Length: 428
Image (cartoon, rainbow, N blue to C red; front, side, top):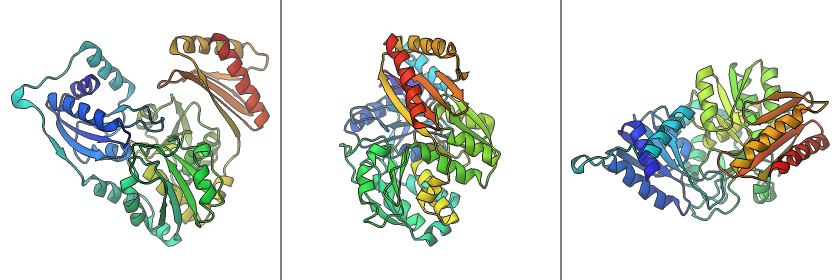
């Protein structure tokens, strides 16, 4: 309630859009947040169960001061969060986030008197505006003509009520999986190959042309090919970047630990590449500053700023289907056309106190090596060699260190990840 009150104080009151996912704790948090916003005198438009990107898209058409999304996203069922969204439909940038924390720590809240308590009304028409805009943004005619069969798994999350309309608008045959609203998430909510085994095992028998796995808030996406191959989440942004940059030049923004496929694609397409810290807020902020055409991360996320300021699962699925339809290619063929690397991802349990000391140790020991590469301190520590790179950073959401290593040779990628893990565990 205090965090929601701090957000209301940061906005100065006004109209706030409120949405949530299906997790068991979301209803409770929704009630608490709504009470806090009403107590600050805000006009609350309750979107109910609503994917985060649809809520973000609606901010500008509804002339809202901001929005608040309640969702654990790609995290396990026991997690949940409040996501603060500004008047432009983007996650609050780091400066805005610090301003909310200032209100929170100071107890500086808006407290409406009895005559000026806010009002809340239900809003259910938001999906029509969203899908109208999405249909205009995509080549629906090409997708419809391709007569595709598509498997979609929204993990029982906020995207479930909207799959049918998405399929109707783009004219493909929908095979929904885990698509009933549920507080119990039927698989690991982070979209990646090990989450995709159920879909990979049935897509060929069902005649599917593409399979999509989503996070519970619809901000992350991973792919399963028509042959039953579950692709790494790193391929999602790469497929979309290769498609979008093939028809539109401009700046691309990604983070410091996304696959080098993006570097190669940007170079092939003559695009400028900018790298930021990890997180949607950083990506979108840099996109707007650099007037970029596309942003995304290797976690399975992409954003087109000319459509919205959100990592958007519906838009991402639509762009992949558009690429298949316009080029007359199978999903497996789109993947095989991309540069190939071997990537290794690890998590090391570590509290923040030890984590930042571990990063200092990583930097010192890696730079002292005879064959040290080029160091980058944009976000944590990264080192690049001609054949690959490694990256280590402290997680902002969990008490752990994240290590990623990518190389042309898998053994080299594993060896470098082992080295970083060895250094970090010295401190842990």
